[in-house]
Image (tube, rainbow, N blue to C red; front, side):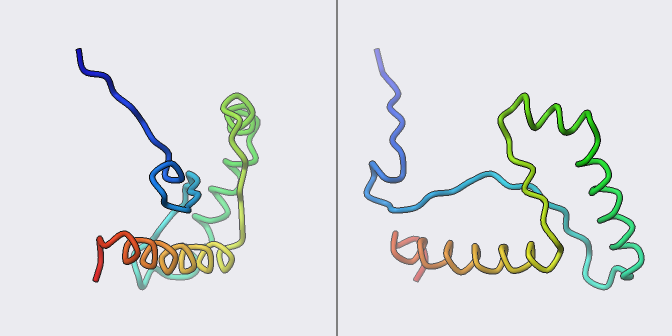
Length: 92
């Protein structure tokens, strides 16, 4: 009988912590008023009682952030992921 063993990154010798995030992307060239309307609509949905209940029930953080902060976070994560993949030998 085969058994399945799951190891964390740390147990594999990889010093990395990752978290789940969600976000929205739009096609380059999307008019700013459209982007703002989408951003505002998602912001209202996140603040809704139903979504707040979901966050509470799943022990999930809201994590809402301004567009510029989100773009910066994505840029920093891409750099860190590239470095990690190089260290693991997955990228040259």
